[in-house]
Length: 571
Image 1 (cartoon, one colour):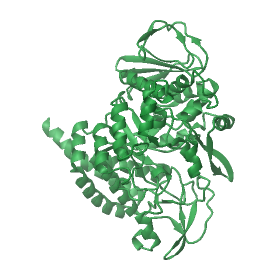
Image 2 (image 1 turned 45 degrees about the vertical axis):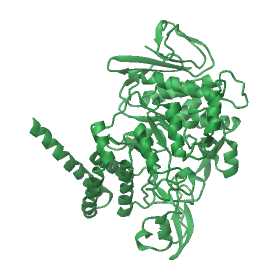
Image 3 (image 1 turned 30 degrees about the vertical axis):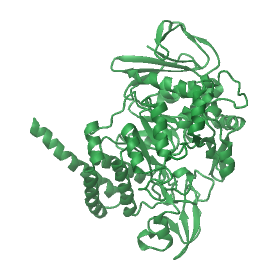
Image 4 (image 1 turned 135 degrees about the vertical axis):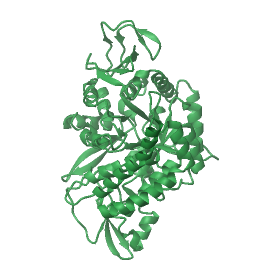
């Protein structure tokens, strides 16, 4: 028996390398694959001997481990600051004091040197921006929490060393980017922004028009060049060696470009994701990949592949559908999403993020008129709207607003149901099968930050306020403050969820159609069962036949009466 087990251990790396070589053949050619797999094995073996990776492999027994106890806080490195202390140290201290172990993971948005876009125009992939701290601060956080970090795959900063060498005409870097000698129209290319696809740059070797999907400061990488892929794989391995356990594949759908296509979600993009999955399997089998693909539902879930691509995918349909549910007092579309989602798919469930509420994920669930109603609601609640261009026509792409102000009308500050309504919206997300991702401004009940928009002209700044630790702690000491009430309510929900085994990511679930005003889902795991009920309306609803069930959230017996925006987890 021992000999058979030993043989399987010996064969496993060989089988993975064989699969890696086959993928590289599909992306490039047999000849290129032969050379790359030798180089790649050498790099993976070197990183595999890293102490942090070795300790995590032993701790997690070589496989990803997620339970009902897991949730992830999404934050910038400098969302909470205080004088005389590096923001990463302040963030760590804030989490240990206020969040403790109720949240088990943290996604620190790009903490690398960057020139724009909140860190997503990366200048140096392997450095921590000195204004935030250093790798020792990252390591300390990774010891207390599951750490998620961004692998910004699609582009680098125009101020990066790679692009600087391109501008100087360095032959090694000429093919790191996609460029033309003249302007070119490519109307078939999917555009997530209103900015031009190509940006004009003056170089030492002439005028070049360079591919810039997201902004003139974010220059797309050319993955047709195998050296670019190898450099990014090295970055991936480096992050694992720093204690990162969840790799977020930023804007992954845009990575590969082909002439006369939309240049999104192409087959070779999926091959690259498969390749990364096998690299994790070989080097750090405990680690996970999260695909960030902000597209309609069908395209979004394609990043699961056949179970051989991303471990998790963002549930991009959820934020607009939950907003729609509370706007109309009707949860039928959320229930529909829950019904069509297979039990073998693991989503990263979220409602708010550093970006906005994307509306592409609502396509197929909401009509154009219903999406337009969300746009009108956002504007009425003081928010902003970002657009994309399709066939020369502007279409809403993203609603820029804090989720608290999206759910509640900020023109009615005395609304006694505001916190309850907001927490009900968050409870919908927490009831689903997946790993909850909680943006720090939702955890703290933040409102629209207009000053940031005025200073920068960037719509997304409305939900990216930087907070003084001193002012934050003053608010949290006041039990009547909005921040205290939201944080206390949120931590109570999360703490209750952690103790209910039926919320395990591997559980079975069934939508219970009781009333369109209720988001109701039954979760079952290893003989244990819970029925989550959330009222998305201001109506009181009576449920005959449900009396005397025990509510696991507030440890009382349910009498069948569902309060406006009530949240229940019934045994």
